Length: 321
Ligand code: BTN
Image (cartoon, rainbow, N blue to C red; front, side, top):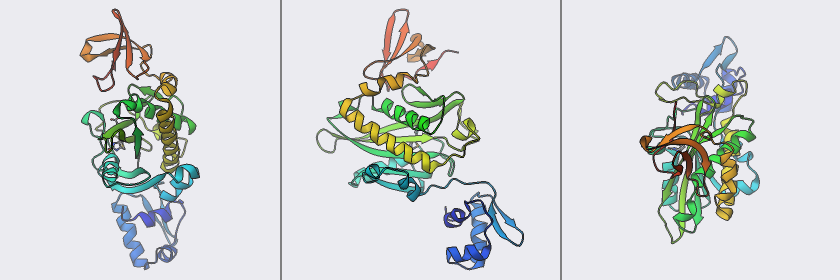
């Protein structure tokens, strides 16, 4: 985003004279005018107030490294290595690259927009710039891949906790880890694994997408929501959500490493979207009523023949309409 410095100055919503902007940006007034044209080309809604200057008409919610770091407790801040990017292929891919290059600390990548956002099952994750939160964290666990059972559900709980701490009501989890509001899907979690670099040490990339300001998504083929759609009266800040989410993810990962999935099972069940619903799995082979998860995070379906457990990574569940 080439016009970021200008847009940041205008983001207070006030009228700024060309002269003042020129001073603040250290450029000529003609250069300010050119930057305004560029910002308009980039999609920002800037108006000219005759004789007074420029004003941002539609508010923007810019990502800001300093604001995100300030929103974190110092114990969390000192653990992470935060990169805030204007645009990237995928924040998950970015973290994988950082792990490959031997990055130290807990790497966290946040992007304003993604050009190749990845969803589960090889799907694309819609990632328009300026609208949503795209965040990935690199987490390290000890004890081999078997210690990761239930981790993706734990991350869903961490996202739900974060949203509730910010005042969002009605958050539900659709097994294994989709984040739902009553209107539809609000976000998702994509866990990608890096091989064991040293024996027993496993690197995990936890990628979270949350729809924040998105108001249109013509190409999304399922009911969806965004925080702005759900609570239009609230002025959502991606920086604030990012700080709260980073803290929650790190805390949950620490508890998970110590106590395993058992510490999260109840929190997950309390938000189970399928509970009591008639559902089918394995392409119709299993049909019954959703009744929560077992100790490993497998989904349980009560059928006429008894309870059947569905493994994460297996066929997805769907509600029978
Ligand atoms: C899903 O399909 O529900 C999971 C979506 C995960 C999207 C996030 S956005 C940040 C991170 N980077 C990606 O490319 N994907 C994840």
